[in-house]
Length: 498
Image 1 (cartoon, rainbow, N blue to C red):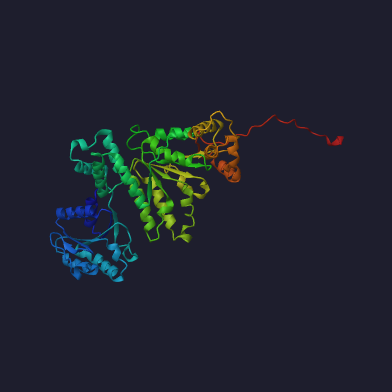
Image 2: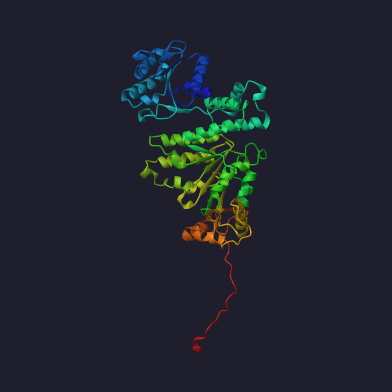
């Protein structure tokens, strides 16, 4: 449903107060103006720079009445007419809602609007509704442009046939433009024309990466990692390749994602970063800690905006690293942060369960006991995998990868690596190259996590047995049965012979 259709329904239903959250004010105003023309409604708009302006008239710029926000609200009844509807758009009006007089005047106008058919639309990039207005104002989100709208914008910028890509190149271009506002997409298209003489996705990815960093909510990972650079984990690799294969599943079936539980250093984050390149999807990194805001309602707004960007960039991979650290305080949220963490978690859970966009979520976790149990239930993730210490075969593959990466002698003797993770094998190879030492000598600098945190590792293995899928072999993870030597002969003694 378009913004115009939603606004028409809400105004017909007599919602006299609407808060339109949008970063694209000109586009939103154009849709509101189009709706008012179609319906024969009167339209006025106000901002602190231009003052109060009726459609088709000059602004009252330069007069204190025109630029006074309180005067603009008091002028609303004058816009009313017996048989028509009047709409007043207040741009960036959240800046003035810390005044008790303005809030009370707005309350009165919204209540009176039920009879006079006068409506107020607050146009703002953030939602900051005073408590007095919470029950009188409905929030409406101005969605980011759809794929069809991005295509239309591209055709408007690339006027020559040679400038416009076709086929798979066009799909790659629109994938790169997903998540941008209309203004940003148009600017990125223009930059591509200036640089390359035609529309190419590379320029858009550069712009998008900068914009995502600027927002501080998501980061775009564009590394060169692949599954071939990861030893082992064959079961996860096979699942991801099959779940994310393009064009090979019903249109109404979408993969949801996987939760990776495992010992630190076993390749959880490396797998997540390689997944995007392996499947041809952009990888968005979401740090839960950056969503926390100091202003009331900012955290909730941040998580909604981050998820909206992820939906708009679909198909993509959304990566949450060490998610238990960001969500571990949910249980005590009511006592520690007035319920902010709980509301953030609830919003994210609802999105995990209900989103229909092609966003594949991959979350990593070192201690699942710190996560609420509802986080990992079915239909929020497709599977929960446990990554144990690599097997002997996997370790050999990992040694080969890193000896080649750091240009080490492939024939030299390997150290004892019975309890090593892949990260520790890499560290040994890197230190051998750095210090110009044999691997056996370099290994003396490594203390494996299975030794330093032996109790935690055992507890994690015991929990995962029978509860998680095995990252290496298909099926449920089971702890390896320890090898038992020859059975000792039982000796019995007859007490009577003592």
